Length: 620
Image (tube, rainbow, N blue to C red; front, side):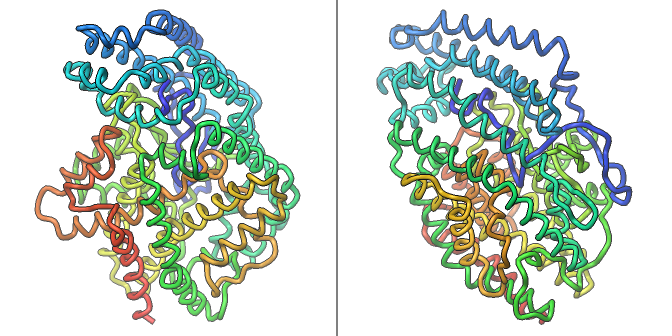
């Protein structure tokens, strides 16, 4: 299938990953939390339709290979070559859509409960079946890319094939890195016993860990949540529990990290990528120099962003330095209490509706049609995501909602993804997927809409200060922290070329980049050296993390255009989302007068964060 094929499509991570369906353990004060209804895909893991569709996949893939393998160059060169190829791509897309339905369902059920052995077997079996079936399709992209540019261009004069031009041109960007057919087949088939298996091991290990906080043995999500508790002793106890359990499991996490870094190095070397992150940049359809400019701008801004903010925060706590477990502590003057689910829903939908009725209507369906899974449950993956599934269905959002203001922002974030995915679905399975550089734009914009609305309604000076500080913290976590993560990954993958890294060495690299990004006002205590172990993006999507910083800085610039725009901004914005993967990010930003290749572009986005810190400093 395509490089963005459903057979290899992981559950899309946004903040973190996801899961499934057992009795809710959510605290009553959040209100009843929704659990998703996956029956829109399949009624259960034993549904007869799954066996039927898997068989159809097998049959359709073999038939496709029989009809087209070894025939593309000759077929496209014929007089009716454009029509003939368009029909082939339509068949290919239909298979991709079906694979997306099967793979997404298995992934979502597994996200709901990654420690249940029956579900794990189901997930593994479906993944293997999809990989085996898609082997019959590998030839298609490879043969298509071997056809001469002039021949393809002539065929695309046919309207039916011209429809697929964005996908064909996108596919041909991979041409320089393609290998001989049998090697591609081996890489594809071995993925199930290679990186995919190590991904499963990570998910099952992290979901199965328990952290002893006081007398309780907690899973990772509620333990991480305690780092935002009002009680300082609980934050400290949670950090120490995390450190102890991570230390006890460091050999496993170091092995997973080393193995996946080596696996990637082998693949990149065979394909001819020069830099450790070049394959990610290609997948994101973004130029290396643009990412380098972003990272350089953010790192240069650490002193006026994170260093300055954490110094302010330490002062609010009447300290010179904050222990690392107090980095996300609620501010002393912030309102206490839990935000119930109905209130969170109202906050986000009201903010969305203030921008666009169409955007709010789409977002509302996630609530009314049960497309959201919100409770914290044993075995459920930590974090949050919005999974697009496939265009013939609809997205699903996973959260671990615990009633904190940050959870409301996460809801706004994931619904931004969801709206984007719904709007882009009309482009079909091949052209709906959006590169990560733009995928995070809609989510961060949704957050910004919600934040700005809440800020405008907050009249109390101290609560306004708390809200503003909370937004700055989120932006630092999205921009500064993610660029530090990217720097960490670069260092680990680069050093891995010279041999395995011990857990101790990985921890040293982690402390180095964290110290640089957090600054002198954060006191990094013993135990923090192993906090790299739970970040899922390092495992599932190496170098993914810079997309958050890309999206946040881009949205800051985009929002400034919105605040100064005449009529029509919302329509242009929704049209940008609806384009899906049919246009390069530079083309999509042109209607807004934005150019990410301009070296000053990133500084503009970062100045928005700096301006908020200025305002906080003026509040005292």
